[in-house]
Image 1 (cartoon, rainbow, N blue to C red):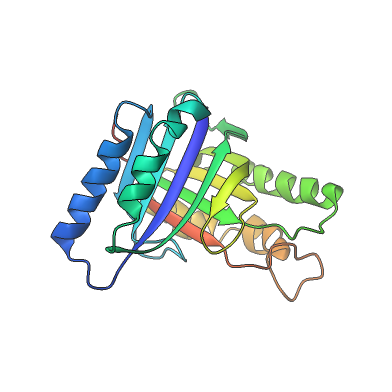
Image 2 (cartoon, rainbow, N blue to C red; image 1 turned 30 degrees about the vertical axis):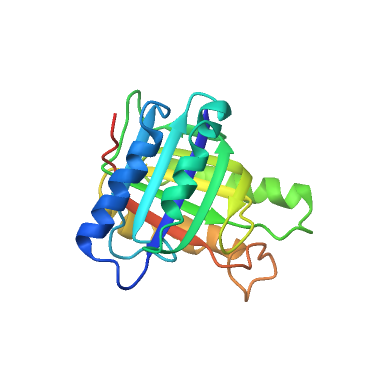
Length: 211
């Protein structure tokens, strides 16, 4: 599988109808190529998450290559002010139960400092993957490394989840002790273990993919 995510920030003067037309054109650009197509407005509370979250899953990188130029042409519209994005192969993940799914999809784009020792990166990754064992609201999860990044930062990792509901993300996940007392040390500039210094993109939307 090959995954592609784009976080789309619209220009201030882009009206609702124009945004809808661009979103439809974006979906048409990958129609028939992607097995999973999620293009939804982001929900309140995102951080550097854009106005629209687009996430596609392809059977192979070649399928993405067959429509990448069309997608970038759509996103080159003057209606679009900025795009952050990643392309990657599915990494390490899991599911709370067979067939588990959530109503909210969330993605976190982040960059680990380039001089970070490999053993430290592995500890960081293990801490992220430990979280679903403590937070039942996480229905599915996956941590991947990035093949290609665009936008504000050369992203290195993508941390994705599906949550049972929005409260599961904004409440039990973000406020859980394992998050703020354990995992946050990797992101906290006042902590000597910090390895994520650049801005992150914390984006989420209703999990209602096109099939």
